[in-house]
Length: 304
Image (cartoon, rainbow, N blue to C red; front, side, top):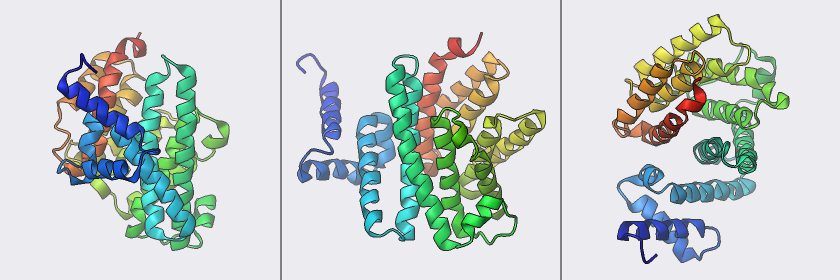
């Protein structure tokens, strides 16, 4: 550490603390949690500046929730929180890292994809269980894709995170046929959540529907037109402040149409936005901006 700057030394020490999260004493665990919660910047700040620390914090939280749910398997609050955090952890840290490592270390990437599937599957299980507790007929509804249901506004967050977990599992499974048969479940969940609360969480449902429709292997011109309508709705609902929308568009449409200039323009737009203009979107915006930076380095690989 002799040749490191003071700031580099601090960063290294914090990362070492984070790496020891599972084996350290209770004192060190308390220190890390104090750093995360006592700061006015909150965990999202550390996602940008100390990603290893934030990853360890999330891993601790989701694994701790697993133990709590083992003791309280029907606690709705625990189930809903666990669905959200498991999905966020798998997307933001495991799946994202795997995507970046594919060209450098394929086996490491595969290991991370498989690990993310574990967390996505856990989130899906918790979400479906929570919905079944709230609505005993829910398993029948989703199996038959019933239009007769009584989903309520209170169900929207758990429906959203459950759909996201299933989508993440399919993505991480690299189009495994056993997972692809669940694609209609995502559409069904999102459609009914949008019916109940179309503007929920600054257009998160419309954003998810846009991504879902553009990810369908059977998409056609009509599907893409339908997807773009959701894209526009999400832009309006988020006041244009949701960075993930532009990243998804760049990946799903600009690459598909080989529109290189549009791809670069959209990603530069993402990097120019202030991630904290909407505090509710800060966490996802930091992840989207990080992905945008990486995607720009892949431009020559994506366009030919």
